Length: 95
Image (cartoon, rainbow, N blue to C red; front, side, top):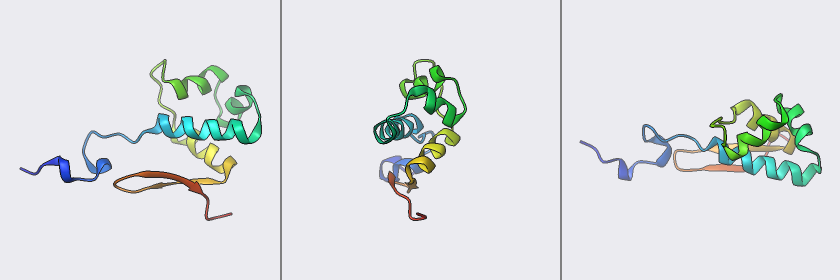
Protein backbone atom coordinates (compact mmCIF):
# COMPACT_ATOMS: atom_id res chain seq x y z
CA UNK A 1 0.00 0.00 0.00
CA UNK A 2 1.26 3.48 -0.90
CA UNK A 3 1.48 6.30 1.61
CA UNK A 4 -0.25 9.59 0.77
CA UNK A 5 2.36 11.58 2.68
CA UNK A 6 4.69 11.89 -0.32
CA UNK A 7 2.01 12.73 -2.86
CA UNK A 8 1.35 16.31 -3.99
CA UNK A 9 -1.48 17.80 -1.94
CA UNK A 10 -4.01 18.18 -4.75
CA UNK A 11 -3.49 14.64 -6.05
CA UNK A 12 -4.71 13.01 -2.85
CA UNK A 13 -8.27 11.76 -3.13
CA UNK A 14 -10.62 13.78 -0.97
CA UNK A 15 -8.53 16.94 -0.93
CA UNK A 16 -10.58 19.79 -2.33
CA UNK A 17 -9.38 22.89 -4.10
CA UNK A 18 -9.76 25.86 -1.72
CA UNK A 19 -12.39 27.74 -3.74
CA UNK A 20 -13.59 29.83 -0.79
CA UNK A 21 -10.08 31.09 -0.05
CA UNK A 22 -9.43 31.81 -3.74
CA UNK A 23 -12.74 33.70 -4.02
CA UNK A 24 -12.09 35.64 -0.82
CA UNK A 25 -8.64 36.71 -2.00
CA UNK A 26 -9.93 37.80 -5.41
CA UNK A 27 -12.95 39.54 -3.84
CA UNK A 28 -10.65 41.58 -1.57
CA UNK A 29 -8.41 42.52 -4.50
CA UNK A 30 -11.48 43.52 -6.54
CA UNK A 31 -12.87 45.73 -3.74
CA UNK A 32 -9.48 47.38 -3.29
CA UNK A 33 -8.93 47.95 -7.02
CA UNK A 34 -12.42 49.13 -7.96
CA UNK A 35 -13.78 50.75 -4.79
CA UNK A 36 -17.16 49.28 -5.76
CA UNK A 37 -19.83 47.86 -3.46
CA UNK A 38 -20.91 44.34 -2.60
CA UNK A 39 -24.01 44.96 -4.74
CA UNK A 40 -21.74 45.67 -7.71
CA UNK A 41 -19.86 42.45 -7.01
CA UNK A 42 -23.12 40.53 -6.84
CA UNK A 43 -24.16 41.95 -10.21
CA UNK A 44 -20.80 40.93 -11.69
CA UNK A 45 -21.06 37.31 -10.54
CA UNK A 46 -24.84 37.00 -11.00
CA UNK A 47 -26.05 36.48 -7.43
CA UNK A 48 -27.75 38.44 -4.64
CA UNK A 49 -25.48 40.64 -2.50
CA UNK A 50 -25.97 38.37 0.53
CA UNK A 51 -24.77 35.37 -1.48
CA UNK A 52 -21.71 37.29 -2.71
CA UNK A 53 -20.81 37.87 0.95
CA UNK A 54 -21.50 34.37 2.21
CA UNK A 55 -19.37 32.84 -0.53
CA UNK A 56 -16.43 34.46 1.27
CA UNK A 57 -17.47 33.63 4.82
CA UNK A 58 -19.01 30.22 4.29
CA UNK A 59 -21.67 30.93 6.90
CA UNK A 60 -24.39 29.25 4.86
CA UNK A 61 -22.20 26.38 3.67
CA UNK A 62 -22.12 27.52 0.05
CA UNK A 63 -18.94 27.19 -1.94
CA UNK A 64 -18.31 29.82 -4.60
CA UNK A 65 -18.67 28.42 -8.11
CA UNK A 66 -15.78 28.59 -10.52
CA UNK A 67 -17.84 30.98 -12.64
CA UNK A 68 -17.68 33.59 -9.85
CA UNK A 69 -13.96 33.05 -9.35
CA UNK A 70 -13.23 33.30 -13.06
CA UNK A 71 -15.39 36.41 -13.46
CA UNK A 72 -13.25 38.10 -10.82
CA UNK A 73 -10.08 36.89 -12.56
CA UNK A 74 -11.31 38.40 -15.82
CA UNK A 75 -12.09 41.74 -14.17
CA UNK A 76 -8.74 41.85 -12.39
CA UNK A 77 -6.73 40.58 -15.38
CA UNK A 78 -5.50 37.67 -13.29
CA UNK A 79 -5.33 33.94 -13.84
CA UNK A 80 -5.17 30.90 -11.62
CA UNK A 81 -2.25 28.55 -12.06
CA UNK A 82 -3.00 25.13 -10.63
CA UNK A 83 -0.30 22.53 -10.12
CA UNK A 84 -0.39 19.29 -8.16
CA UNK A 85 1.28 21.09 -5.23
CA UNK A 86 -0.07 24.63 -5.22
CA UNK A 87 -2.41 27.26 -6.51
CA UNK A 88 -1.12 30.65 -7.62
CA UNK A 89 -3.07 33.74 -8.54
CA UNK A 90 -1.00 35.74 -10.99
CA UNK A 91 -1.20 38.43 -13.64
CA UNK A 92 -2.76 37.11 -16.80
CA UNK A 93 -0.40 36.34 -19.68
CA UNK A 94 -3.17 37.12 -22.18
CA UNK A 95 -3.20 40.87 -21.57
